[in-house]
Image (cartoon, rainbow, N blue to C red; front, side):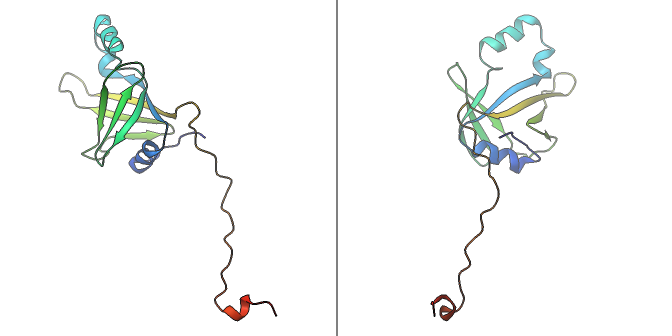
Length: 137
């Protein structure tokens, strides 16, 4: 099942499902740094896939794949400036260090955790309003 995100509600719903993983596709702040700094970010696991550990009303806590520690993603000011397109989410960064930056995440499910595809609605059995209707004659 592919992930399709249209707004913050879809993103939170995706994160609440078991096996939710986000991966950094692009981080313009890191891309502007020297090669040694970029390598340090990689060594610390800052660009590793992130598996949801827990979630609150205003933030999500992720564990980094293959690294100790956690990373937080806050949305306490709502999704102001966030862009949702297909399975990607672009979050603006306000670092105050140069031009505006953004982090683009790709959302997916961990291997073996994809939710089942729904085939459609099942017909509900009609419950008779009158008990005489229900009794065989």
